[in-house]
Picture (cartoon, rainbow, N blue to C red):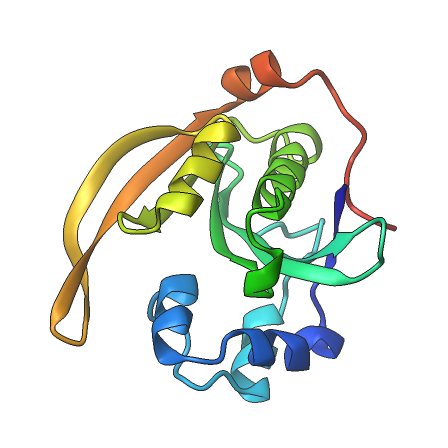
Length: 186
């Protein structure tokens, strides 16, 4: 089982070792960071995060509850209280050897529980590059629906990448999952 814990400065070094090439960083963060990741950039990233009194962005590390080891990173941002909406961003399963073990699904489901149960959101969306078939399959298994494709939105080298937009609504989530305890430690 995956539990989510606040991502803090103590987690910066591990994330910097995971995001070890420019293409992976672009896939993970879009244009939010410059390569290589730095402590200064990550300090800015976590500033004001995980504040339940001013919920703008929640940034988590994913912890394997069996081993206690950090296995991934995920965030929920763009939170609109008025529209009761948020957007999952920066999803990363840490080590490539950990992929295909259900970690991504565990992270996403834990974050959806936070969004729909704790924050009482109505809609949660995300964007994923169209070549990332493993991630698209993960999101579909978690209940997301494909809503459209933004063609050639990012240029990387000589290539353009298209973005698949996906979303899930609270009634779709509740149909798949009865009320569960919060996965946030602490």
